[in-house]
Amino acid sequence: MAKRGPKRITKRALREALEASAGIVSLAARRLGVDRRTVYYHLSRDRKLQRELEEVRRLAVLMAEQVVFERVREGDMEAVRMILKSQLGAPYGWSERRSVALKHKADFPTAIRVEVVRPEPARAAAAGNLTGDHVLSEVR
Image (cartoon, rainbow, N blue to C red; front, side, top):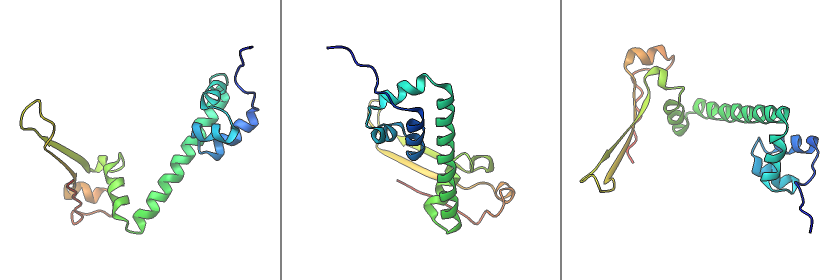
């Protein structure tokens, strides 16, 4: 039996599948009826297609960010926490602090604490509408 190469798919079909799947290769492959390795094979041979994939992924992230910002405007506290924990909150002093308590070095953690730490009032004022009045804390 002769060894078969990757299934032949057109660049146009591959482009459309990648756009429709927001750059998620496994979903694009499913749409095309091929294994994801076939999609990666075609991507490895075409620099322009690789750049287009990165652009599709960048646009998908921008759309997701827009949804998160809309949720923040609506007062969704989980979205607020997400923004403050991200790189967007870091320049203004918001950070996530984690601590682990151990009995002995060989033991597994007995407690994990996660907190969102509020910034100093001066830094918060520099961030815009957030003031020192906003306190978010979460313990898990």
